[in-house]
Every structure is written in structure tokens, then in C-alpha cells.
Image 1 (cartoon, rainbow over the protein chains, first blue to last red):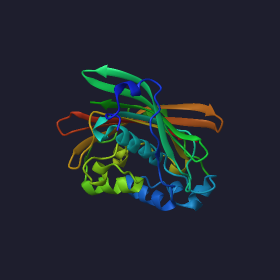
Image 2: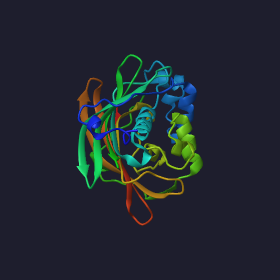
Image 3: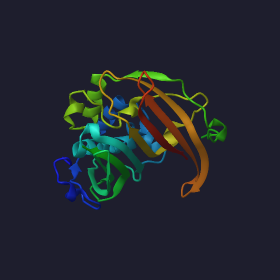
Image 4: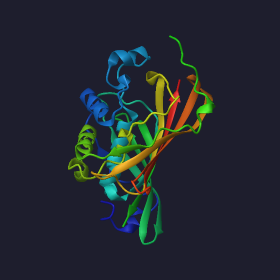
Amino acid sequence: MLAARPDEELDRGSALPDLRKPPITKLQLVKYAGASGDYNLIHTDDETARSVGLEGVIAHGMLSMAFLGEYLCWLAGPESVRRLSVRFNEMVRPGDILTCRGRVKERTMRDAVVQLQLEVWAENQRAERVTIGEAEVDIT
Amino acid sequence: MDQPPALSRDLIGRESEVVLFEVERGAIRKFAEAVQDQTPQSLRGDIAPPTFPTTFRMTIPGLTFDLARVLHGAQEYRYERPLRAGDRVRCRLRVADVYQRTGRLGEMTFLILAMDGTDESGSPIFTGKTTAILR
């Protein structure tokens, strides 16, 4: 998608298109636990979650990071992703709807490859940035 | 409830064994489906999603804590190339740092884990850095 856009539109500060994900469900957390191997029960068992002071299960932070990984692949293609670094800022619960958003921080040229430094984040339906990160993608 | 002892800085530098992981097409597809990742190459099982290295689980001798008291604070991955079905990845996990901080939840221990994945000839594929917060 980025490769199809003229360079001048991808300069510093350019907003990137949004990727809205379907609502997070408890079933998704069970599937993600199985697929990722993260069996921490605070993500799948309400009783365990309450025993540590949560209201109920919370999503794996890594699920929201995976959404941002998908976002980078959607923007630049899976071969182009060089770095993704995130901070887990807020908890995500079943029913939350996350949207991946971003903007270009910097555009540099190296060996005929355009490198974009991106600011990316996942925000919930209340516009809270739950997972915030930086990324680097190559556009050839 | 008894609190496990705080992690010691003596753990810094401790490593897992080198573990060989095979990237299976079915595992890529299962991961993409769980994430509802629409990337065609991942849905087909050809190219693993960027966060797939999280599936490479390793243990470090002497490093134990109560899972329910761990918060995942931050995560980073750097990539030389994407992982593909059929890749055989040699991975190792290392304690990069341990330190205590007092935050709004009281005394917390920060545990920094570094992971690297290479191909069988030793060429780097990715590195990872995990910040875990134990409260």
C-alpha cells in the first residue's frame, strides 16, 4: 500500500490509513493462548483474573502487538518489516475494539531503499492508546 | 499469600539452552487465524506474522516467578527477514537486566529478556527484547 503512494505524500508527519480490528472476544483469547503458547490464566480464566485484583480476563498484550504487526504488513508488505517496538500502556478487555493507527516520523534513503520510521499505536473505542510503538519499514 | 523472593541481579547473563524451532505452516495459519490477521501470505501459512517469535518458548535455569503477578511492559522485535514455513530457527533467551523501581503500584522488579534467532548457519533472522514487570 505504501509502495503505491508517491514519495512526497509519505514525508514526516503523514498520517497512515487506519486498520480497524473486529471486537476482541474471550474465544479469541483462548485461541491466541493456544496459538502463542502463552497460557497465563489471567487471559482466559475470570476466576484467576479476579484473584489478582482484575475485574475479569484481560487480553494478552502481545495480541495488540500482533495487530500492529498485521498493520505493518498491510501498510508495507510482510517482507518490509524491519522493527516493531511497543509499550503496553492500558489493559484490553473482551468487547474492546482496537484500531491501528500511525504516522510517518521520518523518511530516509539508504542504498536505493526508502526507510520509513513510523509512530504506530492501537487505540480502543474510547480513543485511549492502549499499545504504543515505533516501527521501521523498507519501501523498495 | 507468600510472595516469592524478588529476582536477584545475579541472574543477569544467565541463558537458556539453544533450542531449535521449526516454523510449521499449520502453526503460522493457527496464529494468523487467532489474531484475525488478514495478511494473505500468513493466512496461507507461507510467511509468519511479525510477532510469531513469541511462540518460541524457552526457560532459563533459576528464573522462576508467579505468572499471575507479571505484567508485560514492553516488547521489541528487529528483523533481518520474515520467518517462513520450513525455517529451522536456533533460539536463545538471556537475562539482559534485572532492576528494582518504586512506582505507583509500590516496589516493582523489572526483568529484561533478550532473545535471538538465527538460521542453522548462524545468520541472524531476528532479535527480541521483553520488558516484564513483577509486582
